[in-house]
Image 1: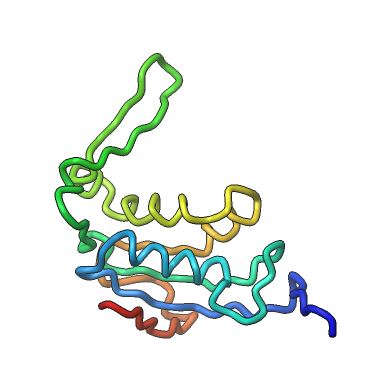
Image 2 (image 1 turned 135 degrees about the vertical axis):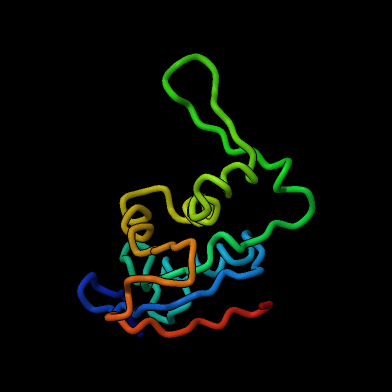
Length: 144
């Protein structure tokens, strides 16, 4: 028997819609990362992008457990000495989509395929999104 390996044009990519209201960031982002990578399919192939598109609405309503809103820090380097940082609470006020975006980005592969997978993630702070033409199917994630 031969092992099936998907080829780049073979996989039909679907669209999924996720409502992030009152969902824990880490648990939600693992499910989203799994779908973006294509690991939910039996035809998963590591070197081919076999994942689907994911549209996430209500990103500003996600939650952290414990005191992570005050204690979790996002840091980045600006090119000048020292690092900039902000808490998760401030990041949610300024850029509500970026909290979930960073969690998912860090779970994807750190290579060219991972960057292509991340382009298939569409995040929106409110309940509306411009992807009605793709007819995204409502994705039910356990633990909601």
